[in-house]
Length: 527
Ligand SMILES: NC(=O)C1=CN([C@@H]2O[C@H](COP(=O)(O)OP(=O)(O)OC[C@H]3O[C@@H](n4cnc5c(N)ncnc54)[C@H](O)[C@@H]3O)[C@@H](O)[C@H]2O)[C@H](O)CC1
Ligand SMILES: [K+]
Image 1 (cartoon, helix red, strand yellow):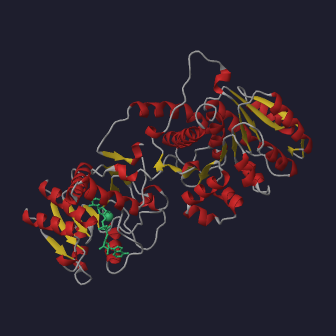
Image 2 (spheres, rainbow, N blue to C red; image 1 turned 30 degrees about the horizontal axis):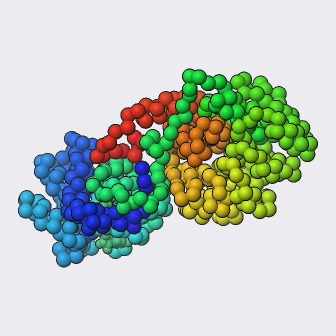
């Protein structure tokens, strides 16, 4: 499913009206009517609804909602934040007239009679927020700021039409006053504010409603949310053996960080690799051997707990002689001259590689590393978190967090690699496409979860086309976290739980893929 910015939505909206020929009032009717239906379903036993409409089309949608709530026999009080009818958008005015024609009443609210709205909210069971939608640019100006504060202070449940008023559609950033919604009902596609933090936290449950927007005007938009529909599952063949499913060589670890390479290796096996071998500094061999059962291990020379100078030659030999089909490198490997030269060498290996963690920190120290990556003819997957991305690009972490998509895209272009940028959301960028994962949770902000992801990707790159492997791996990783949290809670979740829940994630994902069906209304949660 695509995820849009306001301008893109407006473009599809205009063309649907002008070229496809669906009148704007029909779109508004679809939007408002479905919003009313969802509201009535969610708040069945509630009686008193207060509708707060702005002067634009978001307010127009809210007036349609008011009409259906009124028809359903609810007590509806409707307020329009404007000084006069003349200031309303054309479709807003039309819906005001229709509402009045069926016996509905409205009150225009300005700074002067704000208290009337404040008073009405006291008796409200549910508030409908139709003040601003995609036409809003922060920050809120004028008395509407006070209205938003009053609504939030009322502590009543709020249903936001399209966007919680005061949030900016195109980013996760927040500024000034904005509505804190319990439910947000958005139209055609989610917008970035519905999925990116911190804004998305204020949207409540997000429903996406088909209002008849003609999607073929959005062909050039290649920004997606990962959903069961747009990701693939690897398949096993009856007539196969372990080499059919790849041999993932996992390189990393150092004294004190043996867990990183152990977790990546275990995740690789659980994600379905035919064989997984951990290549490690010999000083941690014993602990690795005692923790890995299905996986093999190859110790190489080490000194002071890290790969030593001699290790490079040994690694070259092992890779030349071994039948490895992918390399996953970096987890817990630390940084010294030897690890740096190992990364330099790995860049030249003619196999798919996943570079994570200290692999990336070493990479950042190599002059011209972007050119080395560009020269590679085999798939390269880079999985930096924001801190690592900062080291790789020199950009401030705050800038990266506020521009995840742009940074990931640019870095992917500069390196011709698949970039998996890990923040409170994970963004995948490759060529002209961007994929956001909406799976995962705050419980996963704990040591080792990145190592698990690297192991999963290293396994899957043997099973699917590289970008598909990354999409599937990122989804499964987040989904495992969500399934684990249901049983374990966010505080106690640890990285190895993600490995334990991978089988369930596979199983549930397959079920989701087998049950794909069209529906006018979908909750973002259901993806
Ligand atoms: N997605 C669709 O195809 C459809 C969406 N619909 C709804 O239309 C709104 C967008 O409507 P628009 O008229 O373009 O803008 P808004 O109603 O969001 O807001 C315009 C309104 O707000 C004022 N304003 C803007 N910024 C500020 C500010 N910082 N401070 C104060 N006031 C501000 C501006 O002057 C206007 O008066 C979309 O969200 C959907 O809800 C259609 O109904 C169906 C098709
Ligand atoms: K709104």
